[in-house]
Image (cartoon, rainbow, N blue to C red):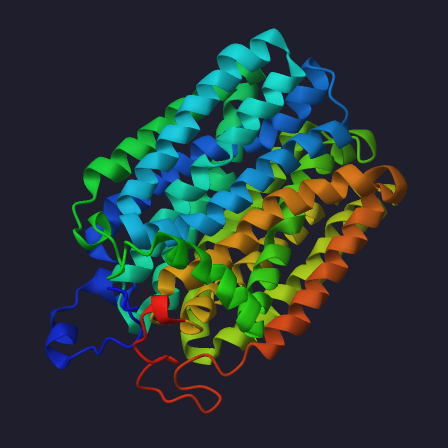
Amino acid sequence: MASLATLTQPTGSKRTAREGILDRLGLPRPLIWGFVGLALFMIGDGVETNILSPFLTGEHGFSIPLVGLLVTVYGVAVAIAAFFSAALSDLWGPRRVMMIGAGIWIFFELAFLILALNSSNVVLIFITYGLRGFGYPFFAYGFLVWITATANPKRLASSIGWFYVAFTAGLPTLGALVATSTLDIFHLSMFQTLWVSLGLAALGAAVALIGVKEKIGRAPLVTNSDEVFTVLTYGLKLLATKPKVLMVMLTRMINSIPTYGMAIFFPALFVDRFHWSIGQFLILTTVIYAVNIPFNLFFGWLGDRNGWSRTVTWYGAVLCAISMLGLYVVPDFAISQGWPFAYALTLLVGAVFGIGLAGFVPLSAIAVSLAPQQPGAAMSSYNLGIGAAVFAGPLLVAVLYSSLGAFGLVVLFSALYLVAAGMSAVLRGTQPGFDGVPPTGAIREPEVDLATR
């Protein structure tokens, strides 16, 4: 089954000669407004992510484990949507999938704000917030497939790095900053801030869907779009038949598990143990992901030149394992010693953690290289790891917080990163020009229709 996007597409000298500065930076010019719209959309999503736990515990009587359970339900929807977003982009075209995602997000957010929260109905809160989880993966990861379908294959990791710049700029970097501003500067309530979140997401969707005129993403990316079931399940087949695809999925899941888990219990940790404020937690979140943004680009560039697997292993997983533990140990020790710069040290450790998270960027290029003739299906398995983290992180908090406590969870998250380091070290031999792989193109399979597999 041939896709319109292939990593083996040759890059001729004439095309290279016409490349401008954006092309050389790995930023596809036809998708510029998509990157802008994605950033705005994820700012809206990030505003809510950063205040949901304290809002529900403070104003609606939720316990931390109950919030963890709610976000787990939301995360299950995210995981399902993240997996199918890429395959549906193959079938229908990325733009249509993005439109569906934006519609789901806006509709169920309105239901969440108007019906569920105003009535304080726990069942409605779970239903509306849970179903809204189908929204952002369709929008964001549909755009990611659009990027893989149109980007220069020689700069694929760099182009994906730009995706994470836009994504991370919103969720949670500027999302946290907007939440801090609306609460502390403009003195809006948390409920009013949630309406700001909705407005920003709607604006971002409009900018991306109206502004991008590129044609490839407006049509199916595969030639046999009538084979719906085969296409949708091919990502699962990759997971079952290619161990390295499964490793990519698990490594990507571990990459984000702590960040979603931290959003549930770190606000309480900051207030109850460190005696800091929710605003200071939001500032830490902003620092982590503000530092992360430029390093997404750097590690995309470094991965293309120094090795995708090597970059993920050392600059991603190992660095995250060390700094994750430091996010608890450093402030706990500094406060016990009475150091006045304890919070500043915590921000510094947070910055290192943000750098480590960026080290995972080349993992998506590895995923596509494992099935270059079917990038949508390859990205389905990769996206499943992202979505699984959204519910796995809060689920671990919901199940283990009472027994392990905050420190025990931090140690667990750090250990998971070491597991990811071991798996990513195995993901060698996937990059053109490295580990014996011919430099002229990525690993490719024969042109075989999926219906015959």
